[in-house]
Picture 1 (cartoon, protein in one colour):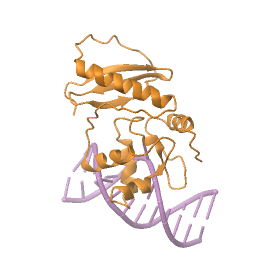
Picture 2: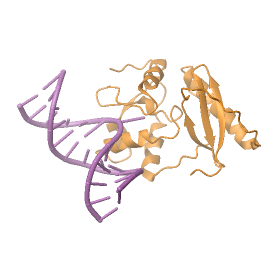
Picture 3: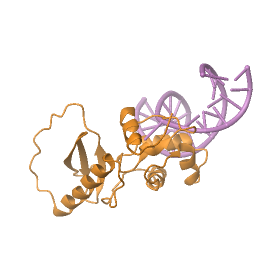
Length: 165
DNA sequence: CCCACAAGTCGCT
DNA sequence: AGCGACTTGTGGG
């Protein structure tokens, strides 16, 4: 789903995130890239609705980075399989400071044995942080892995006072 | 269509 | 504690 995505940066004290918007909502969010090399954004016209979404995204992201829980999310336009969407949907139900295991997510979507597939779906999550894939730990509160970098997972969990091993 | 992999989990040693 | 087997969905050949 890469139709004419609009990229907009979000500057935080943790670096510059990149948000990608389709014409339906937030489609992807990237962690800061090591090299800021912010190429001058071509000043394309950004539709008003996208600017609105971006404002919501920025607010939500900063809220989370500050250890809070956003009250409002931008519309999400997640590209993925039905299975992945149900996983992401289940993830969004995890509230601040709570954690779930991959097994619990798997059970929640009716595929108790698909724990590994759940891991894969989390890794394919195009919108980390807003879809709290970092609140998913392995069975005995072990850290597991994280596509965006384990340091991020650790930092985010710490922000929420979550204990892990 | 078949094969290998993924951010897991459980059981056995 | 460590190692291996099994599971399900996804992506590449």
